Amino acid sequence: MLKRILYDFKNGLWRENPIIVLVIGMCPTLAVTNTVQNGLAMGIATSFVLLSSEIVISLFKKFIPNNVRIPSFILIIATFVTFTDFFLKAFFPDIATSLSLFIPLIVVNCLILGRQEAFASKNPTRRAIADALGMGIGFTWVLVLLSAVRELLGMGSIFGLTILGSWYQPMVIMILPAGAFISLGVLVGFMNVLKRRGN
Amino acid sequence: MEELRVVILVFISTVLINNFILVKFLGICPFLGVSKQVETAFSMGMATTFVMTLTAAATWLINTYILEYFNLPFLRYVSFIIVIASLVQFVEMFIKKSSPVLYKALGIYLPLITTNCAILGLALLIPLNGYNFITSVVFGLGAGIGFTLAIVLMAGLRESLEFGDVPESLKGVPITLILAGIMAMAFMGFSGLISI
Image (tube, rainbow over all chains, first blue to last red; front, side, top):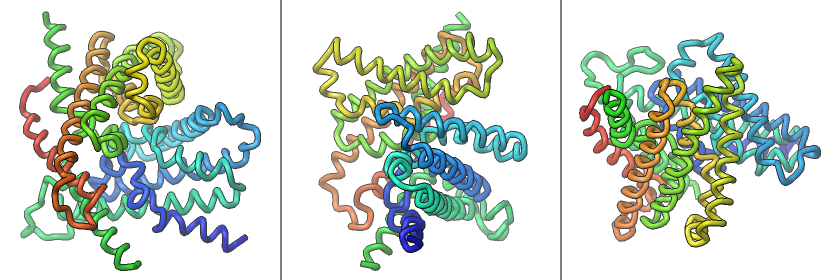
């Protein structure tokens, strides 16, 4: 049983990583990775919603009628997203302002609905928790890596701390939309190279 | 006259300057998933435009006359997503009855519009921007046309790319993302076009 749970947990980290391998949840990945702080906050917020809704749905899976399962999942997810949104607005207003629209848009993040449909609605709660943690951390580490690359090249800093000195001419394009697409494309390509080496 | 000017400016700026896909990062999933052929991309764009325009009208009414009237802002996300899901269902039934040919052409893409974050994003942007009813509908229409423009352009590029010599590791998603990046750069050229 423990082995099984460990397997579910590791699944999301690399083998079925939501961003690099499954290519889902792209909108927040591209939009909020201009600074490490935003990327990390988005990763944690998404992981929280994913974990709570997987717990609730795997507990209630026997009571949710099959025909209306998708609307029910979305309602459960939307409830936790509202909770997260109000929490951030109250305790971290700066982060809430810079993430703005992308906190409510967690509702329609295909990663979350996809995991409910593919995993939480079919498996016991213990395994659903492992899956949510694995997927959440898998999502967060890619977001942090991507935002670190973008912030470093685009502003010469990480977490707001200047890393590259005044000699560095920041490439502003990296923190603009175009830079988001290109750096994610290069990152996924690089991961493909690593994966082919591994095989 | 002033009203008309604002409406036209909102339309142009939503289509070109604040393009939903390339500038606001809304609706990336269908943009990457349904942009292999120009024809399907165009159908997807049209269906999305249709739903977006209706969503803009419906959520404006609900937000103004129910949520704000009874002071229930915390129900916004839940109620908007229900409105969008039922609207998509309604559009599906309507198209199935009125035009079976179009229904067949759109196929699976129709129900998938519900989870397109561009639609919910649009619904949430309207109260944020404080538009009135007419402007909201035009905003929805412009967002849909901007979406169609980007996805059709992308599909055209990808069709030509079929014959290109792409490095093995960049095939599929990575090269599509890099292409989108170059397109976004081109769209940055529109940013000084008008200001409101």
